[in-house]
Image 1 (tube, helix red, strand yellow):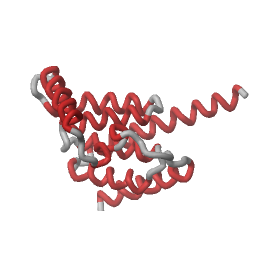
Image 2: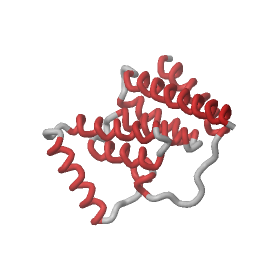
Image 3: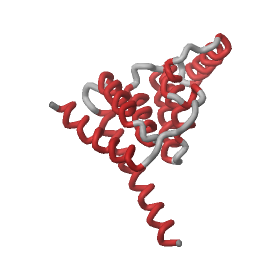
Image 4: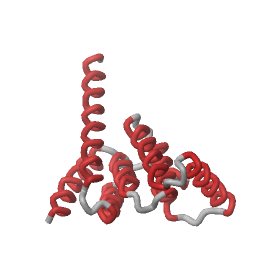
Length: 163
């Protein structure tokens, strides 16, 4: 029941946003797709991933969770700046560091919502819920989206007043 109470507002919110926005046309680079679009990576890309992971773990004293959360924070910063492609890149990095971090999946869900991909956004929200049994991340997710859309609304109002 608790999950239903969380999922229903997300579905309504996602539907509203997807009706207001469009989808991106043409193929996107793998690093701008959540979890790299599930594609197999070349040996060179896997090597780059390993180097990134090694550097991050060194910086965060082998704490994968802390390193992942740092990338999640960067992802949200880019999301707030309306740079969804870079946001997904940072969430992908966070996912490489800790694939069980619910905040990664909430980030993917937000980005997909912004891109008008309602069904995919909902799937990532459900994935996040698997790792967020106490809904702590869900609460933060809703707060972040609320702040983002309030900011966008204020910017649109200011721009409309300037015309």
